[in-house]
Length: 408
Image 1 (spheres, rainbow, N blue to C red):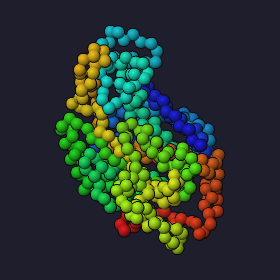
Image 2 (image 1 turned 45 degrees about the vertical axis):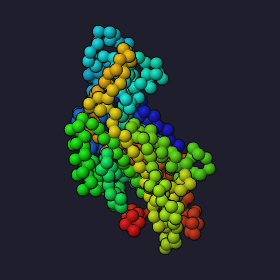
Image 3 (image 1 turned 90 degrees about the vertical axis):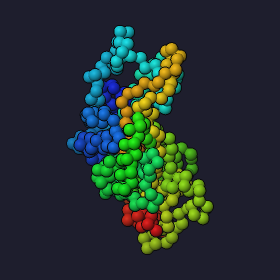
Image 4 (image 1 turned 60 degrees about the horizontal axis):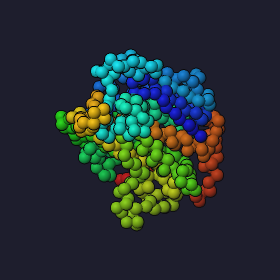
């Protein structure tokens, strides 16, 4: 099984990411991970930090000659701004008593919607800097790096992922629109909002422009699709082994995510039972489903069809016109601290969500099939599929089949 860990602060020297349990023989390159780190910075409405943050990647362990060793994979992502913050974020004791202004000033006006106030209460700090540095979404760069490693493993087993933007604020992709496949990633990354519908993307750009003009921020919904999954990942027998539950937790752990759906999610609750479920039919190549409302899971297990999960991101809490708060040093009403922020980071949230789904799926695959090398995992997976009786086999979940179902 996989274990992942990240460390580091937003303006510290670096982020650290460790993945333990990855089999040997997985192709891993700094260029591949760096490409995903660049994808995380995409999207119309991003802030100024994305323009100069280099995400300087170093593979510190677990990889030799482009292949994983089976030992922990350790990654370092340098923070470009560290030279400006060496005093404020120095791990050694520093006297900041004469630094009442600028970066050294105590942040005593907690920002609504952030971890500031509760973190100060929980960890016994009299200012927010020690909280916001770790709570920052900068930490997701480490997750994206680990997600790239997990996806490299999954791709060796024929499992491929893609994410896209479904909505920005009130602007959403029309129901019944075509779904992207992994072959569409480059086209999605080239779109300003990583939206697969060009007409909707143009409306999203206009919405971001309007929010920027008003000094406000926007949230939205992203969707992750996974193709090529075998049936049976996860389990129905215990609450903490259910695949959909694990995916929900992984996605909800992303900063600013406030809701998760599997398949049609809440829309299914508005349907009657006769129209809510995916009926089974016999086909030449196995059992097939007449629809994909469940999103590729039933009973806490993958069905072998395309997995489809959505995550809803709230509007960024660092609002340019500043929200009302309390200055905890004086007890007086005040406006919240405002640091640079994005107007909209939903496209980046899709890349992070893709990474978290990849990590969770890789973990579920290893839990089910094991293997100290990727070759062993592949043999175990193939043996499992071959052992399923023909009468129980699911028809291959092709990308073309999903599109045909959606059109029907």
